[in-house]
Amino acid sequence: MGLKIKTKTVETIRFKVRTIQRDIDGGRCGLISACMEKVAIERALRKFDPSGGDHRVKIDGGNFVFNLRGHRWRGFVPKAIKKMIIAYDHERPKQNKAQKLGQPFTSKIGPHEYTIEAHKQEKIQPFTRERQEQVNEARRRRVAEGRPDKQKYDLRYRVEGLGNV
Image 1 (spheres, one colour):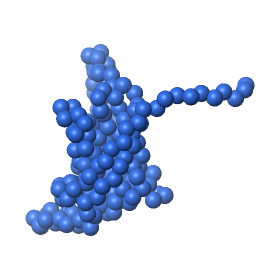
Image 2 (cartoon, helix red, strand yellow):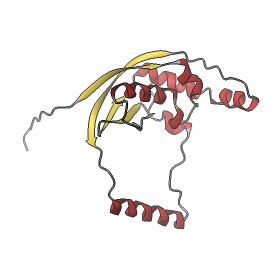
Image 3 (tube, one colour):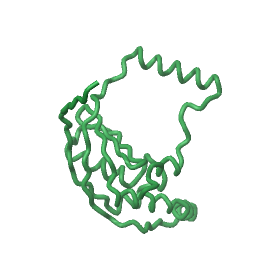
Image 4 (cartoon, helix red, strand yellow):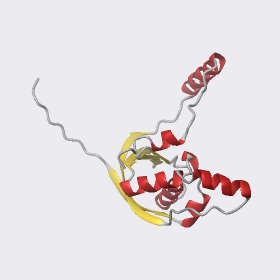
């Protein structure tokens, strides 16, 4: 079998993300759904697509994924931001203590700005009714067998893959 060279076009977008103090104060350490960087990326995407609804931003393990204009986009988190995410997540005990005492939490992380680059992935296909029924049936079966439907999310999962930072 000989060597075969293939060329393909990859669509990419680059944009600036500003993480402001409100994102840091309102974020939750160790939670993928309330990460300060997730909130900042979502706000940046709203500039491009104001009526786009939820862009389903997810950031963990050195990658970020989001939906924009009917496609899924994926990219790598810059190394400096990985370090900030780890430092922010290590502040979870302090944040929980401040919340229990009813005091404001002050993070060591300050406002910052960075540029991310995302590559266009697959087109988003809406679920058909048959596919949704298939998923629901599989969920009911897992519950009946006693297996959890979703994996437990923890700090280890969040920073998995960031060992070289």
